[in-house]
Image 1 (cartoon, rainbow, N blue to C red):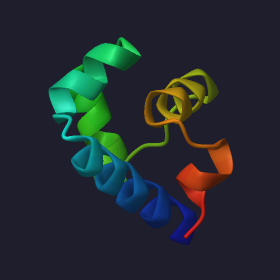
Image 2 (image 1 turned 90 degrees about the horizontal axis):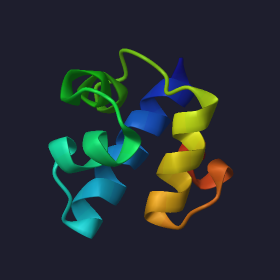
Image 3 (image 1 turned 45 degrees about the horizontal axis):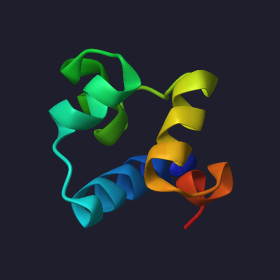
Length: 68
């Protein structure tokens, strides 16, 4: 479960670095705000499609999303 914690921490860090709101990121992914909120709180894991969208949104690799 450490990976889930790292993912949620990285998502929050990237979002704040870019100055995005959770609502904005959710809209970019085409999902509900509450769904994205669950990603950042470590309650659920994004689908592969959303992992790719997140990596493109933040211009990082998929590895960067899940590694410390």
